[in-house]
Length: 626
Image (cartoon, rainbow, N blue to C red):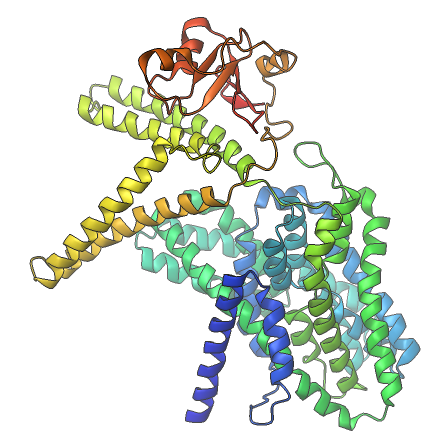
């Protein structure tokens, strides 16, 4: 018992150390851990316990899928339903049939066994897609498509595996298989929706952060186990519940509960997904050891492994480009994926934990079971170690670039401006109501805080482009120094016993939250680059007539800087150009706010950034980008 606990501790420490080391050096932790596991599986002094399918399918898969599902946007998922259908259902079925045909050709087994092998290697892994896709920095739509596919295709593959397994152990009709397939899908959907409603109600009626977090941590099994009990798809139930709960969490959970839930699930995902890759690699020696019972020649086994791996890799691009007319529909901005982006999707088909867990669920009486296990291992290791490291190269060669962080800041600033404007309208309403009116000091503080948040967001566009310190940067630098002094004084009071520990912990937690927000913003600004002109995303202007008219205007600037700031001796933070008359004024982070004052005085609606590397426009009237 103590020896097992010791090996478990070594395993956990290895996962944490290696994954953290990979993160600090920009290396793909899933691939490094898989390779490490493959090597470690041959060390004689290490234990080699067989991978339990129940441990993976019931213990690890539900939280991993839930952690991935709560990161996917439900509106984006709905918009990509055609891609989900083509990839998660169509591609898994086609891969199952193709691999089944290869199995029948090279392996002396019944059709049910060959198709079961196809179902095992059919689904790309949600964990691999999330871990590798986000690290590579793919365009957001590609990441959404890959994650959405990987969340649902596990359900398709497991349902197919259950039906083919039933055919292996007994006689079943096509009608029985079809009915079981439909029942599994419908059961998973219904249970997922019911659990989402139930858990959402519990969150909405729970005030305690700890209780809300505890509910969140058991939600994957609340969905998985009942779905499996009614012969539905537990995988699909977890995915549906995760998507719906995440979508409703902003109105059902408190802010503190959402922060705690996000942090806890990030930790769970970090540990479990990296553990799974190390576990996957450690199975190689076990699988090779079981081959001693096989009567097939090495040549046949090698040919089968290579043929199945090639089939899995090649079927995907053929299917994706053949079905591009259905898969590649315009997104919300009316844009389709380029051929290069479709090429990246067709190349990102890494297999993982579901394939390994599924193969160990095959009945013991399955003919040549040990060979099928090796095939699954080769497909997992091959796709992870071949496609994983080369995916960044393929993405760069095909021109699939991730989102520009400065463009993200531009969109965020525009959305925040509209949100703050709505909040200020509500503040005016509160102040005008004699029953809810507040003091002038409180009113001034609230307006000042709202203005600072908007100005800080717009300053992010300028951060890192020159050596001039923005007002927001000066505020963060000074506030962080003050927080450091405040924390030292609180710790001094703690050590001197001047206040109760519970009181001091609450104060320290408040400081920690503020400091983390300031540091996170500072880190984002440090990563931004001015390599390309910053323009508003296509279609972001919506139906703004002012932006459409201003698009054809190119007035000559009346000056090279804000003349009012020059006269008063103030320093303009960010310059704007009026597209009606060519007036150049400073932004709202500047002391004079002359660009906004020009709009208030003249009614000229649209300005353009007058900074190098920026080409975005802003309509004051409709508060939108263009």
